[in-house]
Image (cartoon, rainbow over all chains, first blue to last red; front, side):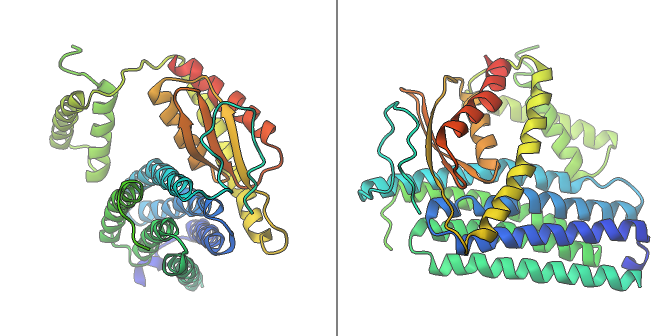
Length: 126
Length: 93
Length: 162
């Protein structure tokens, strides 16, 4: 752990805060995976880790490497961009396929094919 | 003092991420339907990627970054393939 | 010009990505990245995506700011909803919204915005009737949600893409 001693205090503290905050938010998101009762509820949980968790931890990593190597390191921007662009696509497709399967099985807590009516909030599913 | 502080907080965040992986794994093993399992897998690989980033900070080695980038790209492809399979394929649960 | 550079923005983005991966600004990498960007843009022509012209760059900046603020706010909201979930059941449900956006790329951006914001997830869009169905985690009333989506996201996207 020799290199971490090179880190001045004014860098170490924000890095620690970002890391702890990011991992806590990710943990809360995963707890949501267990706690929420329906599939459509659980669909929201991984977004926490994917948006806030990734941004915070990547920022911490960016700051550390930039200070240690004394130049701008912008690698982690790539991870942020990839994850933020791709997670919605995955979740959207998963939601659609779950909807499709539930409809085929004739579950009645899932709305039918929408036909242009007024906003319908009767489909409360918990 | 300073050094101890940052090492402990990296360790703490690794433990938190490990717990988060456990939760995602629980959903993946337990999940009543196939889509729950895929959701668990999706969360699992994102958390694994974050864990690799914290290892990278700990060892100041940028090889962890490359691994994280590859996980971020390939995990997406696999989740998409699974989700498409649920719509078209014959799923045995 | 248009023939040689069918998608200038895409080529530029690929060049940026190449330079970021290699972490260098040396002339060799810039040349290699530019060649890759142009060649991959030609390959993109074969995929025949819908051509759209971006208008109104000011609105793009405002929309990006709104989205960032909403992501932060809804992160906090979803976290508190998950932590409270043991005590009282979460009132979640489906909301259907009529939207008049038809441009493919604008719909894709709207879908990404809605799903990247924790708390709302895009489920289905009916192209014939223009009815969008989303799932909302912490639902107070459906009408307010559909107003929010229509005013906050759909209207600026319409200005940008149509």
